[in-house]
Amino acid sequence: MEHIENIEEIISYLGKAKKLSDLLNLEGFPGGPEAAAIASQIVVAAAVITLILSLLQCFFGYKMLRFWVALIGFVIGFAAGSGIIANIMEVPSKVLIVLVGITAGALLGILAFKLYVVGVFIYCGMMGAAAAALLPFKDQNETMQTAQMVLMIIVFIVSGVLAVIFQRYVIVIVSAVAGGMHAAGALSTLVPELASEKMTAAAAVVLIILGIGVQLLTTRDRKKKAKKKE
Image 1 (cartoon, rainbow, N blue to C red):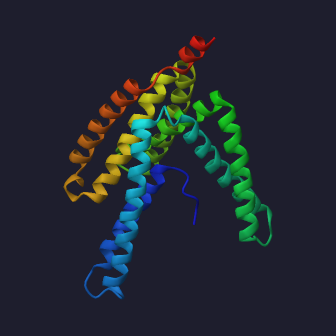
Image 2: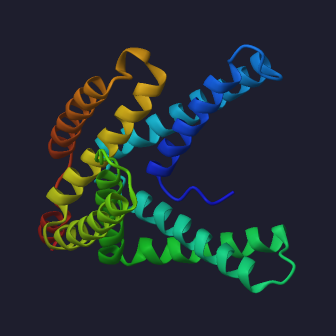
C-alpha cells in the first residue's frame, strides 16, 4: 500500500472505505454484516483522526507551525527514504525499509524544523496544494486531471513564496483554509446531515472564517516579537 502522505489522501481513502462499507451491506454479499461493521468502524476512526488534525490546523496553524513543518518533513523523508531503498534492493526487507524511512524522515524533519524559512515555504505550499486538490473538477478526464495537477503546482509555489514574504498572514489564511476544508470533509462523513455538497461547503466556509479570526486574535508576528526583544 502506498504511503498516505497528506490529509487529502486520507479523505480519498475515506471515500473508498465508505463505498466498500456500502457494498458489503448489500444483501447476499459474502460475510456482509460483519465485514461492513468493521469497514464502518475504520471509516469513523479515520474520519475522527482527520477531523482532529484538521481542526488543529485550522485554529492553531500558526502557533503549531514548527510542529507541522517537522511532521511534513518527516513524512516526506520517510516516503522518499523507504521508496528509494525499496527500489534499490533486489529482495526488499520490510524492516530495513522502515528503518531507512524513519531515519530519513527524522533527518528531514529536524532539518525542516531548524531551517524555518524553508519549512514555511514547504508547509504553506503543501497546504495550498492540498486545498486546491479539493476543488471540484466536474469532468474527471485526463485533461482535467492534468489541469488540476498544474493548478496544484502553481498554488504550491505561489503559497510558499507569499508565505516566506508575508509569513504570519499567509500562514494563518492557508492553514485555516486547508484545515477548514478538510475538517468539513471529515464532518460530512461523521454527520449524515452534512453529507451534501452545499452543507459541506457551508461548514467549510464557517470553519475557515472562525479559524482565521481565532488565529489572528491569538497570535503575534514573530518578526515583530524578535525586534521587541532586541
